[in-house]
Length: 390
Image 1 (cartoon, rainbow, N blue to C red):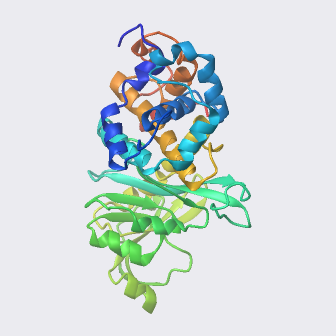
Image 2 (image 1 turned 120 degrees about the vertical axis):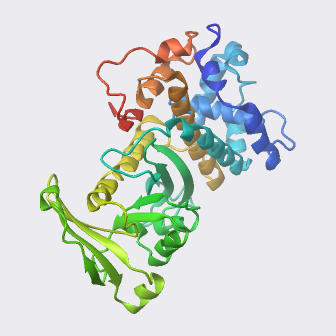
Image 3 (image 1 turned 90 degrees about the vertical axis):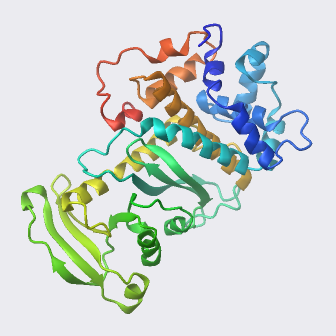
């Protein structure tokens, strides 16, 4: 890269303006715009995420202070906080969602060689969960949560080998997690790992009909009959049972009429008994338990984006502004993940983001910044995407 460019401009050069303009044209996003078009809006919000600024006011303040550098940063012009706020309120959030989907499509293949540790399968493995952002119901009147509080949920499907989000849905806090199953296009032969909140037998049967597999924990009140028992298990591994079962209540059996597999496992580390259900009869029972153990990666992902991106403090109160904010945050994560892969950097995404946040106005070649040797990190572990110091 040109050493004369600012670091922010070097990072921004990875973002395809042509692809973004395609998304804008699809929704006619720049219709009657004068001061601030969609691209400049995205760039300014992207700048705010990359430099960890807390508000639109902070973004505008920093850009005005560096007015003479804006052209070289790739920013057309600075605007007032009210102009940027109105753009977030009124521009179609689907522009940013579609562009985020494009970034997912180019970033995921770069991490295709990663494997889920301790699991022997050639199938794609995804983890599904949601995270909640607490809000003031007086300011976010549309974001209903529990106990008269406001909340937004970010439902995420994470590609486990690469820790890349492949599906994002933003909802109010009362929207039940299992509803997300109705929105996902399940891939044949892929494995979807979920917690008990997603045990909806009708939705699980749709996964079965799509030719995909699920792994989740059984509900405590699940009623079933054992059809067949596999006695060839090793208790030393923590396994306690591996059975084929059929749901026994009339309503459950109607919603999921096929047999499923149940695996009982004792977690010695936490001294708890776990019961898993799945429609995959090819995996070993131990692989089923290990798959669910790696579901924790999505919790780590949520913790990472909340602590390293500006996502808990939202830059607007309307539903449209919240969608734009979250999609720009996810896009920032994807751009940094793409940059890490392109540079073959041994640094974690956390470390890269920290370097970029204080180097935005520096003119050091970005490859020089990100390819310093890291002696205390095992680059073969998938966790190196966002491990280290939270």
